[in-house]
Length: 269
Image (cartoon, rainbow, N blue to C red; front, top):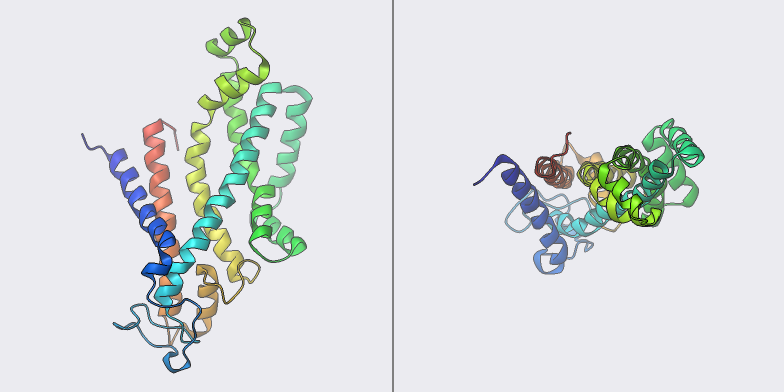
């Protein structure tokens, strides 16, 4: 029986699969070298020869969009993986131990949340220097707090459940109770949230690159392409349109996956 949740999840996975295939087979799919410059083909509008047109350096936009998929997918997934892992461990420990440990960790989270997300990101990257490694470190230092709060709230409820008390009465260690019995049942909400967080990370990565603090030219990246095309938006709209649409479509795919997982796992939005 086909249900809405199956359709939503399948549609999101299909969109993601297209981008993954583009990333994996970029050298085979892209018709041109993404950094090859052809002065004679500057600012060519979309055509059979260049389906997405060319930029101000004569580079093929389609090839650059395809190759950009590798970096932007990497930024989105790695940018979520580290905060997810850190936040899950910190939140689980805080919720399970309680007391002074919980109080200290929650005050730390309050301090981080007191500052705007993007301002903290930009500040950390400005200190560390431009590049993807700085972006990943900044995401890890700032993004873990949401996962910690989610996991902590779930652990606070689950640690008083019957099966947790039964495990304790059987003499299981606290580490086993937390990581083998409580955490697997508490992580569903964080998994769903991570799909929405991927969208935020994707947009943040593009914004950081747009500002010149992330991926550096001439490397093909959607945010960089949008920044490069802004000066020509009135005469060569295709330079910004196609990388912008790519960001929107990939974000839409992850959003559909998140909605589908929320319904499948019974997680309230």
